[in-house]
Amino acid sequence: MNRNATTALVRELMQDFAGLTGLDPAGSCPKRYLWTDAFAVCNYLGLFETTGDATYRELALRLIDQVHHTLGRHRGDEARTGWISGLSLSEGEQHPTAGGLRIGKSLPERGTDEPYDEQREWDRDGQYYHYLTQWMHALDRAGRVTGNPDYIRWACELAHTAHSRFTYPPPGGGQKRMYWKMSVDLTRPLVPSMGQHDPLDGFVTYSGLHLTATKVSGLPVQTGLAHEITDMAGICRGVRMVTDDPLGIGGLLCDATKLTLMMSGGGPTHAGLLKSTLDAALTGLDAFTGSGSLELPARNRLAFREFGLSIGLSGIGKMMEWIGKNPDLSVRTDSLDQLIRALREYMPLKERIEGFWLEGKNRKAETWAGHREINTVMLATSLAPDGYLGI
Image (cartoon, rainbow, N blue to C red):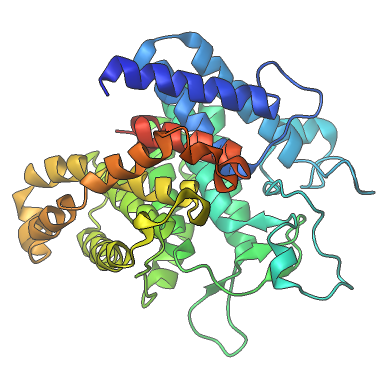
């Protein structure tokens, strides 16, 4: 598919998403979901950068506003009202991310007197740390593309809040840990276990934001995230990152791409962490491709998880380019260049995944229709990843 055809298809997909969720035309009760919306913001910004059409920039900014006024406030089906931060209506407008952002699940969060039900918890609201980091990244991209420092400030405020509420010192002492899911008001954990890649996501996202805030936007130093970055680096130590889940592998590759981009842009060198991340991604790819998952019919596959992998694979070429310009980096990290070359062998999986889900018959499966919004947006990201990856 040539560049013009790809751009036309991405436009179509993002127009479909806008209509489905009440973004454009604007609906009275827009359907907002934080993970999907973070990718969508980046897609619209990417379309603006690719086409020069200001309509897409406005859609990105309108979506940010909808997310803040929907997921930054309490649900309409419960007694609590206003901003989840507890700020007044006017203060909340100035600091819409100060209390975090709801996930946007279909059911209210679990009450304090309700027993934990693992299956039902997936459909319950609350706050996920790894969704918040995606939104921080989307706001970072918006700030860089528009030059408006408010988006960077909101992203940093969200990072400060998320870090202070999701991290905690264990009762017996030792290195801090993280909760995976918390209540809407961030006062209690709903799932106390730690997400496997949450520390890495936090470290990479904070580092990118800190670089944007202090070196690009020129915000006051105290706005930055130096303390949180140091904290998260400690939590990362000793965490096993290997996974055979395609979305998780893709996340590792995306984080590696962002690390490389930061280093190439004058940020601190994290060559050891980059190598560990790529090592884990390569091990995961070996396991995933050997599982036969991509041979299954559409009814047994989840498109958005596979698109997570194809998005991550999009960054390998850029990483090769950046690392090739810094040969000393490869030497210091014991054959980093060899790792990248090994990962390059898996790049054809990107087109294989996209080709499968571009077939009309496969998008008729319930696994596509049941997750239409997220599948649509992440297919668009996979086809045109530059807006998300920032490359």
